[in-house]
Length: 609
Ligand code: X8Z
Ligand code: ZN
Image (cartoon, rainbow, N blue to C red):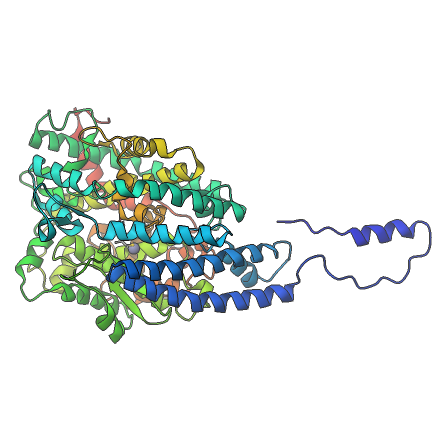
């Protein structure tokens, strides 16, 4: 970054013109040396590794036992980590001018970019930021909606809200649940505003224009190039989304009437089977053609099978990974994880996978329900855990995925192999549905996978604008709904004023987890799936390919996972797929038959919004 000034050399050559040059003296280098850089990297890596374990333990207890005390304890550990992270990032920048061996340079860059919420150098401000961060997540985790006249156990938590959104087709009830959940976030609004100010101050001290630029700098490319990459990929898949939107809206209008779902207008956000309208698979029965038969309904199967409990759902996931050649999860996974919502306390139910000691203390935290969504989510989370274990012999700074989209994509890739043939093999269904079920099956998949894409883009589009100041606290909500309309073609029922804070009703905003990763993962998982199916020698439609039991595919996957973050992500991608670019043609290929079908269905209908 900084050009190396060489004043001493210039002075010496000027002197040579007039008198004989004296014997050159060995000059000390102008800044810190390569040896100092090596020592700094080694010390920092060891220090970060130690602090990280403490912070993870505190955070685990906070998330599985929300009280004022656990919030304070977690905030303090996080504060220590942020202070150290900021100090190290500044120190690391002092070596920018040096030519260094690959690993040292990469690790210094990783140290500079490690933080998600950089704090200001004033310790009081970082303490404030860490406290707010902890409170925001706890507010979300403990969030409940109490219908009029109800208290205590009669109030609805996120699980109950999600269940209602999943199963009810009563627009009034859906709207009440939708509005109810969105009462959880207005108290976050001012705190979030302050949180953004403090993070931005921290990011600026580290040399970034704002924290959004810092987030976008984590992808082995320039931040502008990353933003362009998101747009490129989105434009590749947008036609799929537009077709699905058109088809779904037409069917919702048929179901609820033009006064509820007006043609040519955005779809009301409460009618899509999911509180955030991010995945629509739960309204499959509402929008599927009357005679379509996909052969089975996994939610119904799981609920009927009394021998399958929540833990057994996790065992299905573990067995899948084992069939690929991965070692079983450690015993402590089963004793330390949280699998079901405890009755006696508040926990952060939003699913996550942990690696507390960065070696083998793997854990799952999830309030599992017996339904198809959670069957998929279990695989998603185990993907994180198996990734964590695969890279556990890497040095600490490389104990991460190639980029964060990779971490989110692995378990989903496995879940793509949960095909009818697989379900038959593991005795969840008796007979495989015939080829004629493909369109219904693909439609069910698309309602989750394709519907998610614009949501995956807009979450961080909103935050990037908030961080840059383009969106101010005075128009947080308006900007949110503008993006929801622009990308997703959905709209709230009724006005949503600025006294509300609808973005905060989504976990990743409250908990400050970047979201572009999930969009990348939707693209990558189909690329991984296509490659693994090819490695497995599979020929046939991609939606019928399962790599279950295929050791060759497993070994190839493991090879990429074991690289951790040691190389730039295009190399990891190449190791698995032979491609160096993220490529949306895989998801398009997968859904091709459905696309043709949707286009037929949409003929003569009003599309767009
Ligand atoms: O947050 C998650 C996982 C944990 S990393 C459950 N997901 C995103 C979401 O729920 O919004 C998985 C899909 C997208
Ligand atoms: Zn995840």
